[in-house]
Amino acid sequence: MNGKVTLENMSVHFGNNHAVKNVSMDFAAHSVTAIIGPSGCGKSTLLRSLNRMHDLVPSAKVSGTILVDGKNLYDRSIDPVAIRRKIGMVFQKPNPFPAMSIYDNVVAGYKLNSRMNRAVADEIVETCLKRVALWDEVKDRLKSSAMDLSGGQQQRLCIARTIAVQPEVILMDEPCSALDPIATLKIEELIEELKERFTIIIVTHNMQQAARVSDSTAFMYMGELVENGATKKIFTTPEKKQTEDYITGRFG
Amino acid sequence: MQGMTVRHIKNHAARAIMLIATLILLTPLCLIFFHLLKMGFSSLSLDFFTQIPKPTGESGGGMANGIFGSSLLILFASLLGLPIGVLGAVYLTEFNGGRFATTIRFSADVLAGVPSIITGMVAYSLLVLPMKGFSALAGAVALSLIMIPIVLRTTEEQLKMVPGTLREASLALGVPLWRTSLKVILVSARKGVITGILLAVARIAGESAPLLFTALGNQFWSRNLTEPIAALPLQIFSFAIAPYEEWHRLAWAGALVLVVTMFTLNLGARLIGRRS
Image 1 (spheres, helix red, strand yellow):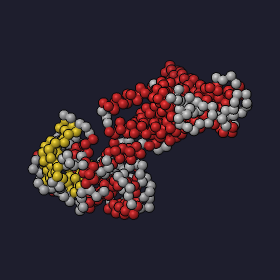
Image 2: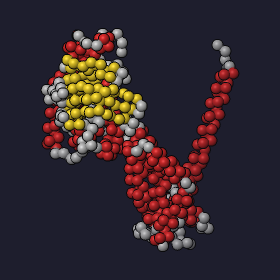
Image 3: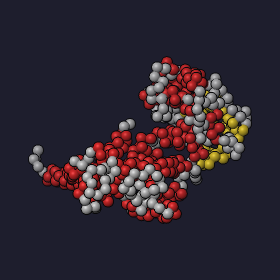
């Protein structure tokens, strides 16, 4: 096991509900791993345990081992706040901060934590907005509300906000499910570019999307990891019958 | 098509009854307002806002000390009550969803229902007795005790309406929960929170009972927090029951000023709440 993120016998319980069951797998650095599976299969739950988002849910319990760069994510000595700076997250629905301008949204990770130098902020805003291909669309109205942007622009802004704090891993929880096909295409192109710098783990409902953007794919069903491997192999010659049924649209 | 069926008649009757109920509801409000305008407006003058009451027998004078005293009491009550109410609400919604929170919520509801004269007695025993004297400070504490549960509950309702996705967005950027609560959740809910605060201020601005054994009232200027201080509602009360025609006129003017202030605060609260 030598991935950026490694799961060993990882389980998540919500009270008596065993939502993710003994999953072991690797997420390779600087590549895109897609997690696919029908609704309720535990894929989002698995993703959210990777930056300790379940910490605030009293009934949630994560067991087994999650290693990030060889260190146990749930070790007592690990500060969840520091971990979330290292492992960023993009959510299903674009969620820019409504009370902030476009500019402030990009540097929110800094501004919410401390004061920052204006020149440094200007540079981060420009670099990050360029990286998500939003700069040309918004450079003349950086001070206007983030809510004035379209859904696709908002989602790219959220990605800019995430990469602004320079994480190593980016988790994406169905980032295109609320977007139209053109906005989706732009996000997918962006993911392709981002993997040069970041390790990306994306949960998606959309199998074509998984096939288009990912290097590896993991198929989950009823909380279990059914099969994972190179995307090309999963989509052409899956080993398990369940995987084949799902990707050919026979169920799910 | 038939003309008026039984169903139509019932419908019209029901509407008429509801309209009458609404009119009955509005009548006292209009009566109060017009009566106050009629009685109080003629007594309003610049003197009312700049002078303190004249000794009995002399004409003129105003309630400047009462207006100033009320403002000071509201200011200090807010300084005490707002941070406790707002931060308490943040704690309840963001940090504690358990039985403790339920207990606090229930206590706040009980506290909000306690008659304000009792609140005054509490402040009396907590501050007036140990300090051996009536004081503006005791009055402010009594008013803040009324304010805290109102602010706590309205703020909590507003914080609950902030979508959880914003909290997650902030946490996912590596912002600690306490900063997220104050800088994202509270800021997002600010309009509703301010509305609640204005309504709480309007509520305590008109309170007289809790001031009876605390701020006590004062015929003269006082800027000292440890001395008794005048307050508009108290002054209205004592002037209205006094046997002098001149004082009655001042009481009417004071009542008008108080009602207009509350009207403005409520209107302001609505306007802020509506803007989105």
